[in-house]
Image (cartoon, rainbow, N blue to C red):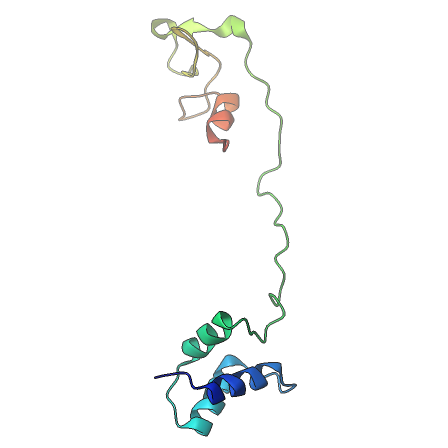
Length: 125
């Protein structure tokens, strides 16, 4: 189906009219008037490609969502806890810190790392 100039003009008129028709209503009007079978998405696409729109931005502007978890500053474990891998207890943090040394702080339950290193590993770069 081709977009004749008269259809483009009618689309523009309907979009800027004070009737505030939805795209479904515009589609129905154009199809009845011109005997076409355009879909709602075809009308939306045509309006978008020609720079026309009857929307003035989002109805509910996005508001920033509050963080799910409060930002908490977690201090790193002290360096006197650093141990070699063979010296680490089962519940010790296994985050590599320098050379063959590992953090050694108290790991979170069912985790391999302490709270500081768990958070550090989750941060986005």
